[in-house]
Length: 101
Image (cartoon, rainbow, N blue to C red; front, side, top):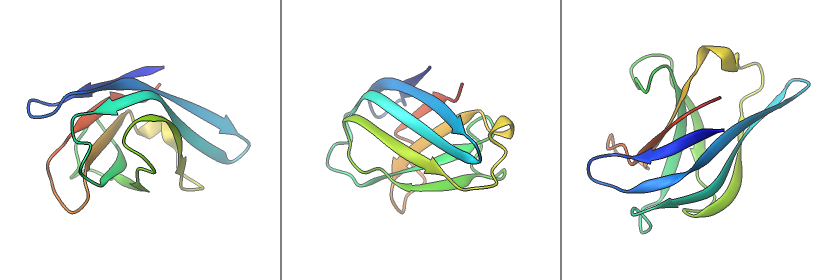
């Protein structure tokens, strides 16, 4: 599992793991917590955390703490993406990142 880390303006922690079953890919966050509790957050799969390079939107987080799953769009080659980026919806401010195993 990869570890979730906050950025300079936010604290965040937890773990992320990837499950591949057939053509279905799910990212599972466990023990996730962040100081950005009041913000609606969204997640992206990225290459080295670079939002300008082929980022894939995974949609809004269903919650801002605890355990939950994010579906990766079908047909995504997850081996190309190594970093999960979490940020408030509609902003370019990164709240947290995590290495995708």
